[in-house]
Image 1: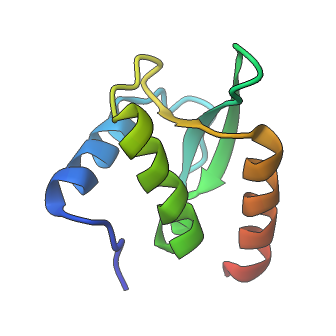
Image 2: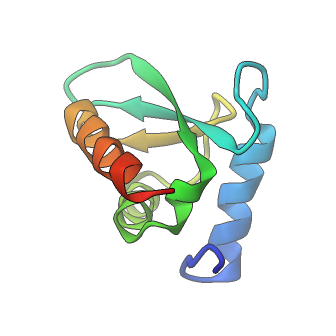
Length: 99
């Protein structure tokens, strides 16, 4: 079972973003994600398991973020523009389903 993303170019852009991120304080098997809520100007950093990339709901979120904002992440980590509460709800549901 691999990461199902629409096209090799998109996967390479995402992986480049991960590789450029600061790996300090990120445990093995996880990645740093920065969430920017439209109602706030600050980014909030989350550390999530890489296995979330296999989940269709997380892939949908990444695809929407790519369509709207692209993959230019000046912070080095993956930046997702979405409601913070929605992101927390999604990752909470995923943590129950991912082994």
